[in-house]
Amino acid sequence: MDSFAINLSNWNERVPLHAASLEYGLDRFRSDPGHLSDVVQFDRDRLGSLEGQRVAHLQCHIGTDTVSLARLGAAHVSGLDFSPPAVAVARQLVLDLQLPVNIVESDVYSASEVLGRGVFDVVYTGIGALCWLPDIDRWANVVSDLLAPGGRLFLREGHPVLWSLDYEAHDSLIIGHPYFETAEPIIDVEDTTYVESESRLQNTVTHSWNHGLAEVITAVMNHGLTLTGLIEHMSVPWAALPEQMVPTSGGEWVLKDRPDRLPLTYTLQASKG
Ligand SMILES: C[S@@+](CC[C@H](N)C(=O)[O-])C[C@H]1O[C@@H](n2cnc3c(N)ncnc32)[C@H](O)[C@@H]1O
Image (cartoon, rainbow, N blue to C red; front, side, top):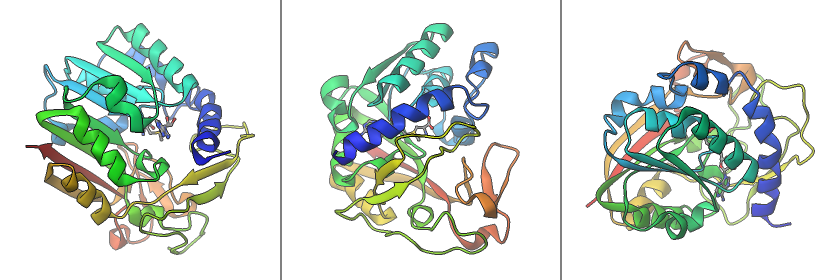
């Protein structure tokens, strides 16, 4: 099997566990019309008003961030993901909430073919999205294709320093993986996912790639975007180093010991001239 098929099998199997989880909390979206995902809430001030804007959300998973963007006033949000069960859960959520959102099943590299070129004011993506893509330059080309002139990219992502760490280390920070993008994938075998669940995965293998911060910025600039914001954060929305982290009140996790040692995520913004 190729990397795409290997990752698709893994993601398909995670979907029912995530949809049933407290962490994704689908019921809260249904019971509270003002509820936003913690991830969108984290960047709310930086996102600003989406009133009247057309938004593309790449790798939208089960739609929790997608509907949160719609709740910030977007005129229309198009979510895109390659996983049929994720698309099905996201579509049901959108139907239940009656929001101006459509969800499309596609590989992210085909996004501009299926969603349209030059039609979006905002492309939003992140939190465990770029690591599934082998080629950051190709991704930046897609983002640029999707954006209308004057449109902006909004990316919140796991920091490449975090992705380079050995996440099984108990009490120290150990570099276990490449910081830079590599031709060969990082191969992991894991029978759990990042939500609380008794279930064990059958499709345990994943292929991922790291993308250094300068590689991301260079790719974005190479495709006609201008960097307008870059912030490195000391928190991450999942327990990335489970034995070395404590939760914050905002649904994020920070290092227990000297959290200022390294960045765990970043928010990058860029605009198309
Ligand atoms: C961790 S989620 C990111 C979304 C968001 N942070 C969340 O948790 O809802 C990663 C998503 O990327 C999707 N994905 C992985 N590779 C993809 C590809 N090549 N094309 C489209 N979607 C992909 C997976 O199906 C999964 O839904």
